[in-house]
Amino acid sequence: MIAILKGFDPDRLVGAVLIAAILIVLGVVLSWVVRRLVGEALRHDRAERIDEITLSFLSQLSVLAIWVLLITLYAHLIPALHRLGTALLAGVSIVSVIVGFAAQTTLGNLVAGISLVLYKPFRRGDRLQVLVPNKDQFEVGEVEDISLGYTVLKTDDGRKIIIANGTMAQQTFINLSTGAAGKTPPA
Image 1 (cartoon, rainbow, N blue to C red):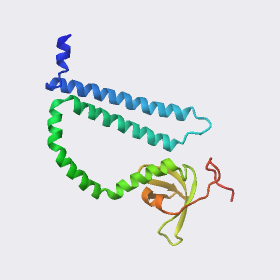
Image 2: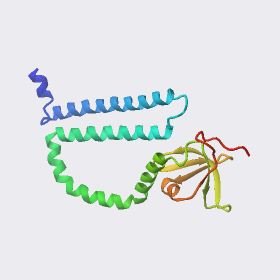
Image 3: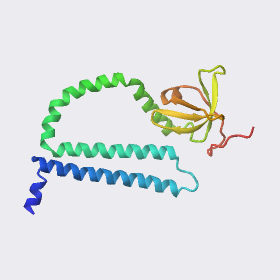
Image 4: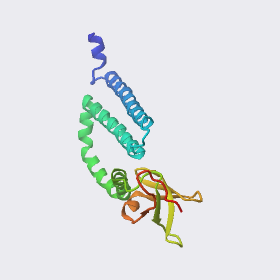
């Protein structure tokens, strides 16, 4: 029993690798469970009360949180990473400020994507009229997907319009769909 416990000694390379392997397996299993629960929730929702985009977004966010927590736990369990983390803290602070400025637009689209998913001004299948830089100044399309960065509309002639969520959250658009089901009004 003591030999087994010595194998998990975080001060030794073998122990650190064993702990990492256990946490990776745990992360894979927990990620699978979250995705499986989301799939089951969607499969059993015959009345379509659950918004698929919101559930998918929350699933991705949950999986990300699982991995961040497991990596943080690993860093706390391994003493060598404590010393390395302390040494790199100042460098990470400077890099985060630089990355923040460089990724301002991307982060803005991410935050706008979160607000679009949470406030739901439109859903998948809704027909939207949006402002676009063409001769008519607008385009009509059906919402095909809302990701964290972009909203994708599909026009009647099969073209795809990809609009950054930051733009989508700031522009005026007309939802041509009626009701919560997202059905198009008759012509």
